Length: 197
Image 1 (tube, rainbow, N blue to C red):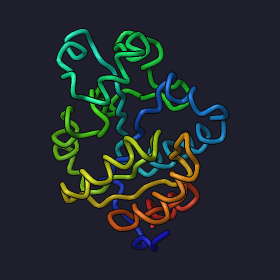
Image 2: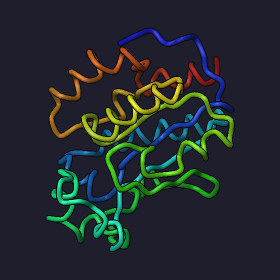
Image 3: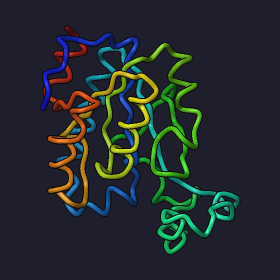
């Protein structure tokens, strides 16, 4: 873990809750602790006046039709198309971390949070220059978004304990060895101090 700076400006910060969808949360087996930590992070960020953004993966019929046969992601989602359809309850954000009016909400059709959404434009319109990431999975949306956000010159923090991967060893490797190259890796317990400092 790296040592982040003493504080961040909540008005210029967005907490992104990524792929916390019913179907994806359900793949983790025992998600209660993770959901509690994510809910705590959201509450802390809201109290401080930070922006909250939600990124969810879901496809409509046109999106499915547009996936080329060379896409590995396309092959995975086609096999469970009903579970990834935009109308399916499995693509809704889990009720324990659900959005509130005024939150940013984007729907993506690829792994990362930016490439198929207007997320960057919405963040820039709000003056956001710092992102705090919580997501499922560490090796998917979180990894892709850390890299892309860093390339877009955002300051990036990753909530290691509000992020999860089906493979705990992969989660540990990414949060301990890879993410610190482009992001500050912190815990939910550290968030309040950073936002209020």
